[in-house]
Image (cartoon, rainbow, N blue to C red; front, side, top):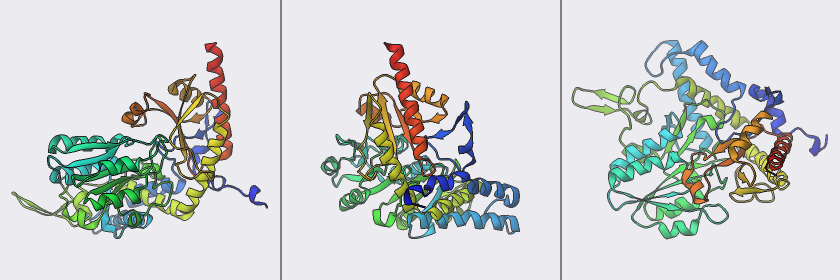
Length: 420
């Protein structure tokens, strides 16, 4: 068998994702909405089902067999996540409902108790609302000032502007690792190095990077990093916060209640050790266990392998898009090998509104996203209200890209004909 004839990564894993084998209005499903959420392999679904069918019990609170098994699997995921991102210890991984809650944890536990009038927070115009709105709350309550890095003309992180904004008044830099609209990859290692020279902390939103490429918090040296499970083949309702151990120890609890306590008295309480002091109440046990199954699944394939294959898809996607007339694309062009950006493309068309485009493509069985993608300030920066976005993952194929391009061209031609 020649290299060209060898099955792609997607062809090898497709049977692991039952949902991808269905039809929408008589057409095979093409799922290109992976930046919003990923599909789940059978191993993840089975892990969740197995917990509820065999091991359903509360964690940390019982000495019986079911509780012991549930606790072992629940805490085992923490070790898997730590290895995935190269955290120094399992205590640096805090379970949250999602990345939004993880950012809010840092904003309320650290930001509200640390920042003062005159302090500055640097964010980017590219930030997802989840890494913007919490810091607006913090600024309003503490008197800190928000500053913003705009994208370059090519739609990338503007390092020169960042260096002009940062000063010894800067206490936090919040930056998206991979933009969910522009697809650009921020130079987080360099950003963190510059921020630390000024004594600022760094929070990295890694929701669009952890599922798609190797991410190493030791190399980045960020103070916090957040990610959501549902974008990396895990269920909804589970995410995580990574934080440097000493910093997490200094931070006060975010929520109060059971699980996060050491001892409780009528007038005061002491708190549990890390990471449990940030995990009040009964956690999403089944979802956390399924997250562990998702990490196993991705790790068995290899993040380098996933990233390499997605670069091939990106190169092919952009090459085929050159055939489509009247398109405006946002974000940098890929390198010749498909690298240099994420495996997504955000666009508008001169003839068709993004929502109309997504609606008609759905009738062909092709799922893409339309709207502002939780980046309204970024859309305003470009003078637009909404865009269409196609985002691929390692289980997508070139054949699906061909179907997407054909349906996209037909849709544009249809609207062009009725407007004549």
